[in-house]
Length: 152
Image (cartoon, rainbow, N blue to C red):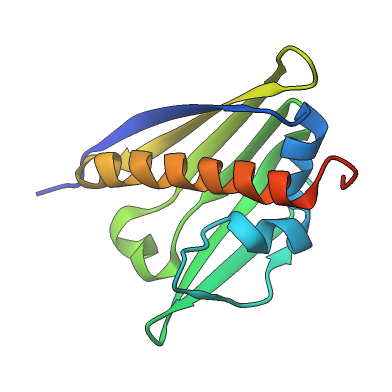
């Protein structure tokens, strides 16, 4: 049976300004703290070539197994829009890649709202992927809060 695909959508309100939230996706020192990181994993040095056509590779070692997350940046329009292809090499042949689109809008008092859509998500992983993105965005909020307002 052929894999069926869907789009998933999550959003998160940040107490941080749009630029800080946007930069956290592209700054390797910040991204490694929250992007695809789990509490028990060991993050390996990330590779982030933050330009349109540039690629990223973020790997976490979990129980001795490497979970590599890869993609290519399709759109970078700071601090409002970011789009990238997204896949795990170990599942690329089976499921292909998704497209992740991020839109950030200003809120009140230096806050912002992030909206994330993952297109071409395998239906069988839609619920798990939605929960995963929500957790990652909450981790991003915590990471930025722990850095204080002076970091950018």
